[in-house]
Length: 501
Image (cartoon, rainbow, N blue to C red):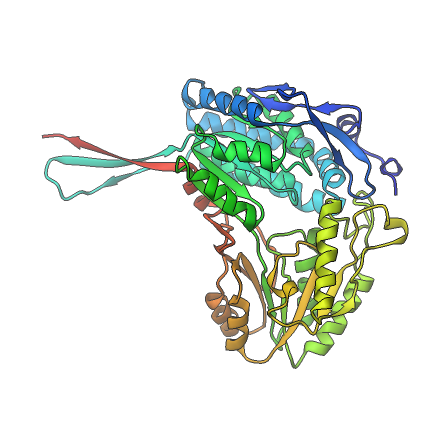
């Protein structure tokens, strides 16, 4: 279905025009890339070009870092009282709320996600996030240490780390920008943000509102570009004090290597292969829909997706039948702007090929497809759609049970013993999230405490709040997003001694 079939907010229609070039945001102004290069961004539902975007590169990163450094060292930003920074962040949240429909439509067009998810999850959580961290701006404090040294007074300051490079993914473009910017701005850092090249538009619209809110020039700079050029230039830049990255574990390892040259601080929120465990006493009216939402939400393009589904063998067959029925009857694929759509396309043709190759690998290794297992056809053939897929007869060592697919593909596996399923659940290089479905609180807490994962959801899945930390164990990352814990990423500790003798 063509985009023109849907009525867009006039501001969305004006912003998303194929003949317009979206510019970089450096030093409070929209500017062309130094090279003059541009790249197209596409609507994954039909392959249409939405707009052309200036392609940031090494020189543009240099300009943006210089602007951020000037703003941090010499501009008004660090001289502002905390309540002034808070006021600006609150103002930005209000402007996002004013343009909520525009952001939802931009996210849906550029990413493909259903408009109902963009309107009721991505945008509201973004607004909440900025307001939460606006509140923290006035509450970042140090401490007085009762040292055991005569005639000495010792106190500790928590200071902003400085210029921060932030690299965000394409699966939740606006929300990931908020997750990165909120804590950084509250602590007084300045930022160079690189959005994913697949989905740059919501970050660039956000730049318009940052400008409108009155943030001093250079506090936030937004440079679209490719990972191997702009992303690498940002991660290796000697005048960047800290890098925050959300994306794949493979790229996260590269980021760590880049940061080693000048030992800049790094926080990483990386991949996952999250186990979701259903016990026989679970409320299946909640567990089956919950498990399906855990993998099919955002087309499965979620780092915490419950892609390994362990179901007790006594209820395995019935649960598998219910899962197939859910996928076949409850999931409605279509253009994200259609309010009836519950699953949109994958973000790019590259991602489509990745997901379908994993489906083929699963079949080759002996797993069986209960439903789905192919690219969607018919009216959806021009978009990047994969049918919601449920595998059974899956072994723990198969690729579909070990590797992150990042698509609507779940591996359903039976278990018998509680200790065995905990061991199997932890048998992964990842440790981002997990789910537990049971009506026994003893079972729930016992399992939750033993799972090696940064988040464990009991009788629910993919629950997030700005106040609650999110991040991973093992190769799922370093550090935490959200909550008071994220402030650690953007501050450093200074100990000051005074001899009052």
